[in-house]
Amino acid sequence: MSAPEQRRLIFQHIDEPGYTNDIACYLRNGGYEVLKKSIGRKPEDLIAEVKKSGVRGRGGAGFPCGVKWGLVDRKSGKPIYLIVNADESEPGTFKDRYIMHQDPHQLIEGIMISCFANNVKQAYIYIRGEFPHGARILETAIAEAREQNFVGPDVLGSGYSCEIYVHRGAGAYICGEETGLIESLEGKRAYPRIKPPYFPAVLGLYQCPTIVNNVETLCHVKHIVDMGGDAYTKIGTPNNTGTRIFCVSGHVQRPGYYEFETGKITMGQLLNEVCGGPLPGRKFKAVIPGGSSAKILKFGERFKGKTRAGEEYDWGVEDVPMDFDSLGMIGTMGGSGGVIVMDDSVNMVEALANINAFYAHESCGQCTPCREGSLWMKKITSRMVHGEARVEDGALLKSVADQIPGRTICAFGEACSWPTQSFLAKFGDEFTQYPAAPKSLRPNGATELI
Image (cartoon, rainbow, N blue to C red; front, side, top):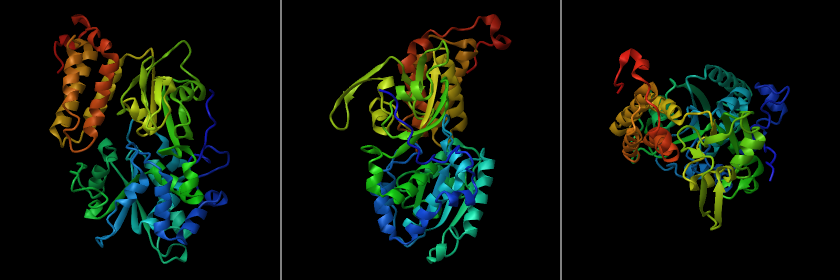
């Protein structure tokens, strides 16, 4: 079966000739028309449409957006805040940056509709520190929207007021975790909060009810409200509605960003047909389907079981539908949509050493298992690639990795341990057989790097 056509919903104008990121161009293409209609509707009706749509968060966890909105404490009398998670710190993921750079008003319109639906008077865009150009684009776009009365006091003469502020982070991966992000936004060190009691929907920013949504997710809100929740559910597959943007990087002939109906395209169709297959003379070896923290898949392995609907499946990696549930069923996750492809030229020990170095650097250090475990995994793989590999290193790595998940405040513990666990499970022989360099090649005659 050939790959389906791209269904561009969020990226419908990205790369379109003559399309610019200024408000005049956005208005010519129907921009802010959905906001105008939304302001005349009841907020609870807008929330109902988002719930009905079944749209799941596109930031990594895949939690239903409408359900998250429904958990917000609306009885406390405290103000409700909305935070846009524009940190996009997951390696292999780059879709949100393109939205902010090339179509920022789509995001602003989605924010304003979401704010109106939830009676939010202040929204914050928390943008990654390495996106200075994106921050400037957003500041300009917000100013343009304010001039047109789409943002600010008395929006479109409705009596409803809402401001949007851009806050630049310092480039910390942990700020992709919503409570760590909230701590950072409050001016503190980004230590994730303990849940309970600090669920953002009840005790979020400034101890007030808070909604945290990803950039792509909020853009979907605009389209859901425009077409209606029922119509939106017809895009994609059951429990995996709408479209997904896949960021494909690594060893394919045509890396890039591609938007398809969720679950309507398989891994094989995406990599072989859409992305042109492996590089000349190479073969696919492995793929990480949802950003670097997702568990790796090995080409050639097979997966058997039953779907949510009770249907039996027998899939190879190429057969797996690219949706949250299917990837979850085979032991990995769709995550943030970052598809990282590795061919048969890749040494898996060296690849894991690179990933481990990243997570050891990015651990906030609050929880001992994560702080020490991520550092030990980095030290072990670093020692291996510097010529001090030992046969028992694979078992040692697994022992360290197995003691981290479930023992930390936030999901960073899982994020840093899953790569090691899955690399060892799928490519364990490469770790036991990794060669140690002759002593003559060891730096300064070193015998131990840990």
